[in-house]
Amino acid sequence: MRVLPLALSAAALAVVLVPVVPAQAAALPAIQLVKVYYDSPGSPDNGANSSLNGEYAQIKNTTRKAVSLKGWTLRDKTSAADHVYTFGAFTLGAGKTVTVRTGKGTDTSAIRYWGRSGGTFAYIWNQTADTAYVRNASGKLIDSCSYNSSRVAYKSCL
Image (cartoon, rainbow, N blue to C red):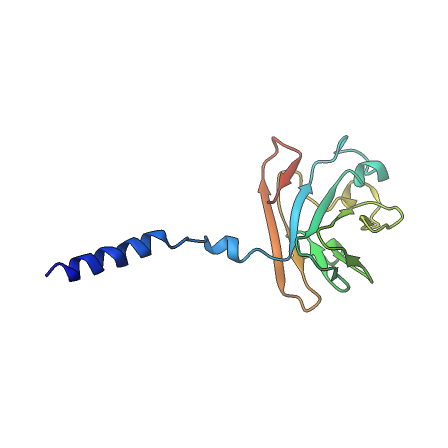
């Protein structure tokens, strides 16, 4: 009988033609870290506001809906309480990116300021290795981005 081998061949072909989606592609978070610029131009220096603001992290909303980030946090790997940025009433538009700069300035819909000052200890991101973490208002880890290099000034997280 030739029916069984033909049926098995058809089943094998169907298995081969089924598209495979990588697990990580299916699990991309709606809010993602895009970039961490950890070695601001001119640093290390005396922690001037312009240099502090040259250090930043970018977060993107990859969905088609606005997402409220109220109570969400951005932090580095240290356990220092002053290394946590907490979003106040802030909504990140669909497909939009927000840049969180380390120094002081006036918040806008695209740029938020950590508000740090005080010299070289005001920097958040280590210049050679660190990790950025984004957590939702419940404290659940949404995304992270690590780097370990002093050869470049930033890490692209995507």
